[in-house]
Length: 212
Image (tube, rainbow, N blue to C red; front, side, top):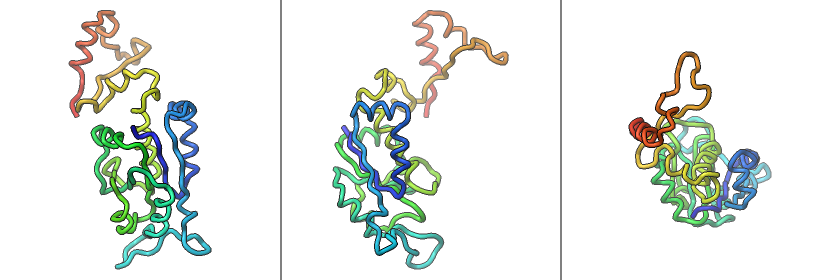
């Protein structure tokens, strides 16, 4: 199971702060996974540790250079290298399961206009996108991917049965859920959920699942 992660990023503190939150913090304290960061700037070129340059052929923005990323990846060898790119394969539960067949991964965060294609050609085992939209860098997508992966590690969730009933499992979304109060702004909780009849409750849940 994939439980050793190294994040290659220009913003390692962002990753470190995330490790202090919620179930991730508890799982990390319990040593259910190992995570490290590699500061891409340390592999920058020249006195100014340059990591990006203007694209050949013209165009807006800057491109992450091959050499710093190449050296950063080689400094932390893992089973697989995952590049977070808008054009990558869309993340889903099947892909999460496939990734969990490995033990360790480098997750490479982009910035600016993306990566020099040659470093992708050299190292990418997977190119992954978390959605059909563009953000300024790969750090937030990396955190999204990490949480999706870490939730699957045994012991991370207090109730392991949660994994069996979560949205997207078996190609379905979850049923609606409710909690107190029973009435809010004239909207009532479905009476069957208050009935105490476990069979009827389970039937209601199954009948109200949503297809993806």
